[in-house]
Image 1: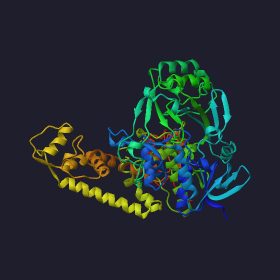
Image 2 (image 1 turned 90 degrees about the vertical axis):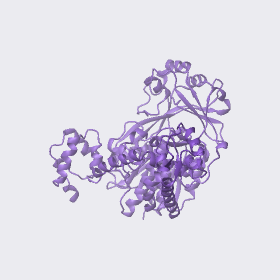
Image 3 (image 1 turned 180 degrees about the vertical axis):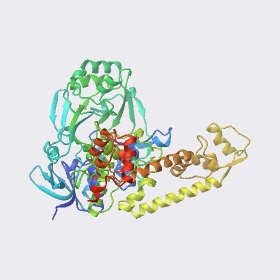
Image 4 (image 1 turned 120 degrees about the horizontal axis):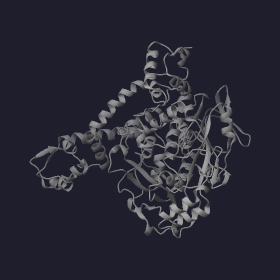
Length: 627
C-alpha cells in the first residue's frame, strides 16, 4: 500500500495550493517542505497581486484556492491599479505583512484534514515504467504515492551570487540539492538554468521619507476573496513610497558593471526580461536619465523596507555606494544585501495542459520549476495541478482552462505551446481576450468549475447566485428608472462630471450610464438611493463595454472550435502529407493536445494547420491512438 495518494514537494505558493486542493478533496496528501516555519515564505516582494497577477489571485479564489483569503487577511495596504484605465487592465495589489502571511499559511496547512506536513528534502524522484511512484529523502526515507507534484521553486541546484562570490543554496542560502534535478534528467526529462534576483533590504528607520514620494492605497472595499468580510481600515493601512535613481547612481553602476555576476560571466542562466536587475536596466535603457523605485514595508514586526526595482548582484561595497546615492537613502543602513540566484527548471513544453508530464505518468509540476516567476503564477499552477492530480486519481476529466476563460489558462497554454527561455511572467498583453478576463468577473468565469470539483462550498455558491440575481435586479431597476435631467440634484451630479444641461427632460438610467464618466452608483445617489458600490461598478463595466465584450466573445467562440479537435501524445504526424519540415518537427516535439494548441506553436504555420485539418477529416494520424 502506498504511503500517500499524493505527495507535494515544496511548501511555497504552488505547493500550498496543490496540497490544500488535494487534501480538501479528501485524498491522503503529504506536503514535503524543508522548513515548516517557512511555508508560504515571500523571498522577494512582500506583496500579492498587480497587473494580470491580481486577476490570477481572484481566479484562484473563484476556483476555491487559499491565496486570496490569506492575502486579504494579512495585507498592510490595498490598492486598485489602473482604475482610470479600461476594465481589462484593472487589478488589485496588496502590500503584505510577509511574516503574518507565512504564519497564516503554515497554520492553514497544519490544521488541514487529510494533509500531513513533513519536514525533509527530496533528493530523488522515483520512477518505475515511466510512472512516478514517490520520492526518496536525504535521510534515505522513501515515501511512496500514486502521484507526485513537484513545486520546488528555486531550490533545485540553487546558487546564490554576489559578484564573483558564489555559494550553493536556495533563497537566503537555505538548503539546496543537485540530486533531485539530476534524477529528473536521469528519468529522461530536460532541465535548464534560470536566474532571478532580489534587491537589498534597508532599515526603515534609516530612510528619510521626506525626500521620497508618498504612495497611499485605495480607499474602498476591494478584496481578492469574495468571502472576505473585513479588511484593515484605510486609515490604518501602511503607506508605501517612491524614489528614483540619480545620475550618481548610474555613474557608480557603470563604473562597476563588470563586477556584476551577470556581466562577469558567473551567471549561466537567463534572467527575467520583465523584472531585470538595475544593471540590466541601465544596459537596455541607456537613454533613461532615471529609474523608478518603490519602497515597500515588509512587516509590522520588522524594521525593513524592500526596494523594488533595485535588484542587483554587484559587490557589497558597491551596493553601499548605490543605495547611499538615492534620495532619502543618504544615511541608510543595509540589513541584507541584494543577490542573484540561479536554479534548475524543467522545460515546460514537456507538460500536458493538465500540468501532468507527457513522458512520466502521474508526475505533475507547478510554479517556478516550470520556468515561471511570481507567487501568483505559482499559486495558479499549484491549484490546477492539485485539482488535476485528484482528477487523475478519480478517473475524471482534467480541468483545462482556455485562453478566454482565465489568465491561468493563458499562462499554462503559453508554457506548454511555446515554452520559455527566461522566467515567465504574466502580463495583460499576453491575453488576447483580456476584456473577458477581468478582476470583477472571475467568479462568473470559474466558480462553476470550483463548485463542481468540490472546492467551493454550497454556501459560497449560493451567495454567488444571489449576487448574480441582485445584479440582474439592479440592471432592471436602472432600465426602469427615468432620471429627469432638469432635476437639480441629477443635473448637479452630471454637471460635476462635465455635462451641460440640455433639452432632454428625462432618460432611463441604463442609457445614461453608457455615457463616459456616468456611474450607476452616483446616479442613484443623486436621487437619494444608496446602492452596493461594487455591484454598481460591475454593472457599469458590463453596460459601458457591452459591445466590446460581445465582440471578444464572438472571437473566442471562433477559436474554441479548434480546441475541440483533439490530437494527443500518440498522434502520428508521419501519416500527414505536405507538412512543412519545421512544422512536422515542432508538432512531433511538442505533441500538442488540440488543434488550437498546435496553431499557437512557433514554427507551425497556417498551411500546416490546414493540411493537418484535412488529414484528420480523412482519418489519418489517429491510428496510433486507436491501437
